[in-house]
Image 1 (cartoon, rainbow over the protein chains, first blue to last red):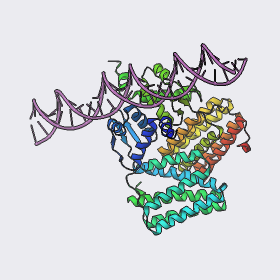
Image 2 (cartoon, rainbow over the protein chains, first blue to last red; image 1 turned 90 degrees about the horizontal axis):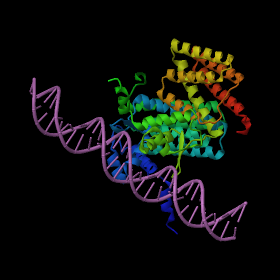
Image 3 (cartoon, chains in turn red, purple, cyan, brown; image 1 turned 90 degrees about the vertical axis):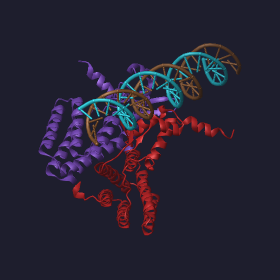
Image 4 (cartoon, rainbow over the protein chains, first blue to last red; image 1 turned 120 degrees about the vertical axis):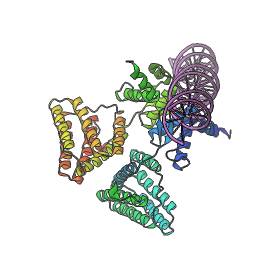
Length: 227
Length: 227
DNA sequence: ATGCTGTAAACTGTCAACAGTTTGAGTTTC
DNA sequence: GAAACTCAAACTGTTGACAGTTTACAGCAT
């Protein structure tokens, strides 16, 4: 009975969850752009399912704030304003500060070593001026912080915010200088964690918010005073 | 044409959203208890709709973390453990600290007066040993903090956490002493906001977390060291 | 009595069709 | 030429039905 597993996989996942994951992927990769309308029929035909599971999946994505439904008018990939992007960023930073403080209070040597490694990798990406690599490693760094802090709820909220932040049209192509600043802040976070100073770790996380917000505004060319 | 409004309501709101609100109400009021299974057919019959809207509504509530779906086995009102309740509480407190800091940086006299009034009301509830009134006014106080802070995202996340926290079976019937402690912390928050000291306001919010967590554990009879 | 097996009822997951609304092209009117 | 109207196509909201799975119970063996 070698081929029993595929059947199990089909049986243990609903079409709704599969559709939801696929649409989420389409949105996060930009194949479905913010503001774009999602046609239920076409989507159902493309995925070879009926409209039922598609509608259920879209309802889930609505609560996840990735799409917006307008009555009798269909669902649209959500568009977020600069103000909303900043709010999301602040919430991300808030949670980051929290987990940094927790890690300062309790973390293993292995965890700290992994964080240090990621910072090294980001330095390499900066040297290579590889913004894409930096972006991904930056996500990995923050993911690691969330994982190690031992608060599953904080991690889930953070992940939801990160997904939502991908809705911003302006793909943040950071300059080498911005990346260097950002990574210096990562280093400060790790230093504070190493010394076990929860307040300092939290402050470093907070500083990372403020810095990230400023760099975001710089990147999109909006003066902070204009907000 | 006196009876035109109900029709309009039906037209401008989908059945799904109505079902979702109703099921949410049933859960938050405890008519649907944590762990209880939700029968789609019965629910659809009770609300006089077909199963489609019901299923869509349940999918939304799943993302809102109020229900849990098990494949081929239906959806259940979510049960949360003490650990999860503590995580939710910490996140609530985290956001509270954030908005307190923002209010210290910017708030109007009217807003501060309203907060002061709510604290007075809570004092009255304590004197009357009316835990129910205290509970509701406490929610109103925190709602006001969220409203006035001017971060819509923070408010939404907080509201979602509050709804989720209602899933805990143990209705926190605080003692008069616990209520007094809690309200004293509210007063410290307001004092810090009044003096415009963002750091102190935030610290007061943080203290309110720790205090609330300790009181919660006291109420359910779990030693903090056991967690 | 106790445990196992088979069967039927109940329920979930999925689909296809219907009803009502929106949208846009074409036509008419001013 | 522009605005208003008409009408059909397209699409969403909703429903009812079908297929497959789970569950509970009765019957049987031990």
